[in-house]
Length: 256
Image (cartoon, rainbow, N blue to C red; front, side, top):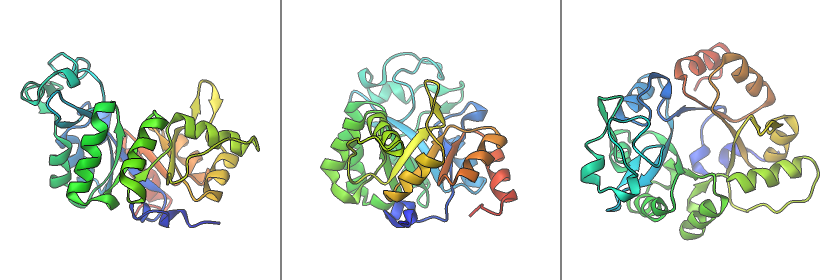
């Protein structure tokens, strides 16, 4: 079987990989520098985040298209200048960080980045190239075509995961149904189930591994679910509850 740890240097970590989802969103400070500091203090080296571009092209680590849900401000990020976005506060206290600043503050971290809007694609790839951090970033998106464009722009230096269409193709392959798959992805990043259909089972994991792909599952916050997925052989888990995942992996002797 292909050694899925060495498909790309980004994956060069003893599996399974613990990801701090949005820095560990359970405390309500998702995608803030404070959240990522907490995760780093807990020993996490892989962070998951999302990016949007402001109207003037600044790349912000933030999940939603608008500021409304988690900040004390309102408005659509891509329609606002950074001078306005930087004034918003998550949970009334924490500013939104620029992704570039997070890269500088956490120089040893590796980042799984969900490109939430087309306007963020070129700024992200340009930042990765300018900083020379090809080994530290994996780019993903629900949009398979968006990730494919990122891969086409950057070439094999860039680690990418499958979007929804790619995951569907891999699931069909696991059922022995022919389906086209984009070459060059290094991981399938998936929920356990989608629309009532189980995504992650032994056949799916085996099929991914046969293609040299890792399987990273999001977003898993309960210890029983974590244990079950680890028993299936998944290669990474994304969680809001970084304390729980650390405890589970410690107990299994799998924290690294």
